[in-house]
Length: 272
Image 1 (cartoon, rainbow, N blue to C red):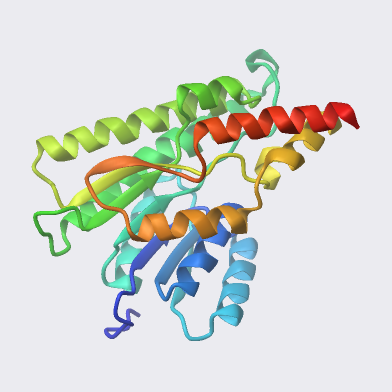
Image 2: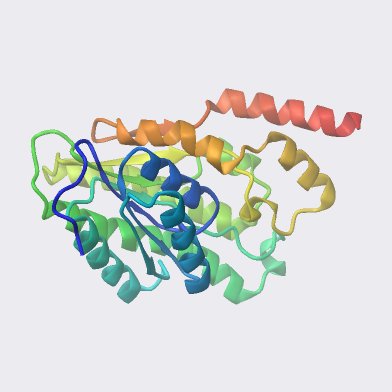
C-alpha cells in the first residue's frame, strides 16, 4: 500500500479522530504541505465522507483512513499496523481523538456509561495510542536527536479550572497532560532519544464537541471567543512539522491571550 517514493520533505502523519473538526482541519493542512496522512474515526460513514472529501481536494496526495475505537486495544493495535503499512515511516503521531461526554452536568447527574465512555476515550485511549506509537517509532531508523514525535491534548490546571465541561472530561484530560509528562521522562530514562512527546494546546476550537449541551447564553460566548478549526490548524501544523526536542508544549495562542479573549467575549455578550 505504501508508495516507496514520496516528495522531498514529506512527512508521515497519523491523526486520530480525524474525520471531523480539528482533526479533519489538521489533515487538510498537512496534505496541503505535501505530507502523507493516515487518519482514524469511530464512525465508518463519517470517516468515508472525510476521506472522499480529502481525496477530492488533494488528488495528488496520499491519505488513508481506518475505523478505530481508540478505547479498544484490538482496534488500536490494528490501526498502528495499518498506519505503518500505509506510510512506511510515521514521523508525527497526533492523539486528537477525544470526547467531552454527552452532557455537561454534575457527576452525580451523569449516566454511568457516559462517564465510562468519556474516561476510556480520553485517558485509556491516549495510553493505548501512545504505547503503540512508541513501539512503532522504536522500530524505525533512529538517530541521536528526536526524529519522531507524539502529540497529546491534555488540560493544564488553569485550562481545567476554566472549563465548564463535566468532571470525567476535565479529570481525564488532566490525566492526559500527566501522561505526556511521565512518558517523556520514561523515554529519556530508557535512552530512547529519537522519540519526542509533546503537549498540543489548540485552545477553544469551535466544534460540535465544544457546544454540546451548552445553554444558549454559553453558546453565544463560545462562538465569540472560540476559533475555527481551520485557523487553529494553519497555526499549529507548521509548528508540529518543525518541532524539535524530546518534550515541550505547542500552543495555538498563549494562555494570557486566551483569557483576555474570554473576558472580552463575555463583555461583548453581556453588552448585547
